[in-house]
Image (cartoon, rainbow, N blue to C red; front, side):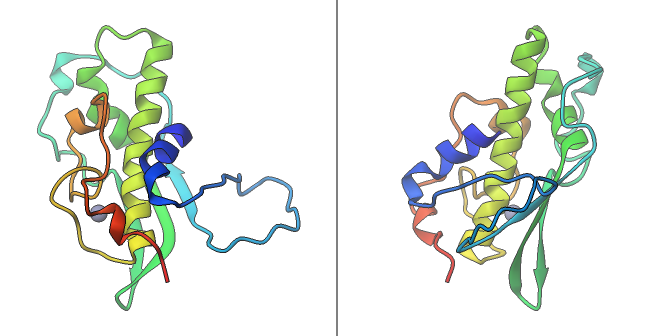
Length: 159
Ligand SMILES: [Zn+2]
């Protein structure tokens, strides 16, 4: 997940550094801080790789969200792991267990990159294509490449 987010943001000039919320507090100072919470099961253990899971794209609701208050995007995002893993399950049939975890990690990274777009661009609006578009389909999540559309990276840079 981290690698995917970093690769998506590589051309934006934004440097990301990761800390666990429960890690010991060091006297570190950050120019910007984003808190991400993960809900549900964030691995592919016990996922049912059945064709019957190939339901409509939006059956499970949003894959991620970011708080907004009085029109301001706040640096608090949440990822819905259960929905992400259910979304990609039909396209991961035949993958070895280790590959499954890698595909889930990439998918989570793409959803998180989308939420970080809202935060760094300080906007609730969406792009038309790529990571900033309003909904990620399961094929976007598992595609070999899924990046910001040209133009959307220029909107990043929180002030
Ligand atoms: Zn969005």
